[in-house]
Length: 262
Image (cartoon, rainbow, N blue to C red):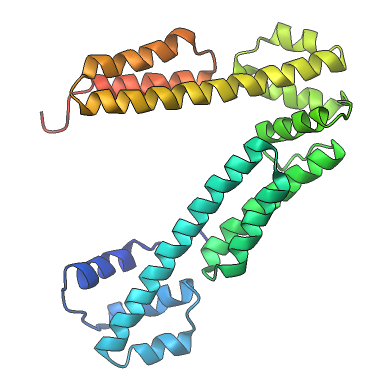
């Protein structure tokens, strides 16, 4: 469904009519756009057709379509942020409840689809936490985090072929060499230490980069471009995770580029 939906035309129409006070003209194209968009936000075809009998009700329909798009987007974004926060704390039950609460109120099919995908992922991670069995359909690092939490709960780490494969995939993303990885995979204790290293490097890298971004933005906005550059240079002086190094280098390139129109 997500590949079929483009809300830019209805957003543009809403901006013109509801914000710029341009008249709403119920041409054939506008009627078709309103009917299509109404269906995409779970307004029945009959209700939408009834609304198109007059300009006041058609304008109200446009308002309702835009409001459902906006409210659904905000709810989904807020839920994702909360899920991320709870996952980092290891509270997968709480994360599942956040998504179920969202599904209890959301009507827009596209947002429901995204929420259901998110719920499937969080539920899958909860299964990994409960059983220690990896799921090939889930992302790697969140599964490592679930296994780490399982170990913290007192469960032994089983050095299965799936776990070895997972660690061989994720270790390079945390700048762990192949030799270090293979040495660690000789024992469950080594694998556990490797898992913690991967997770901690990403956790520390994320915090470091976000702090530097905040300082960089503040300095840049204050006109201290050199000070802003230094924030990313400081990140690059210590960061080993390729992802965060690439992000810091991209920010540096942006600071070094001439401003638009110069």
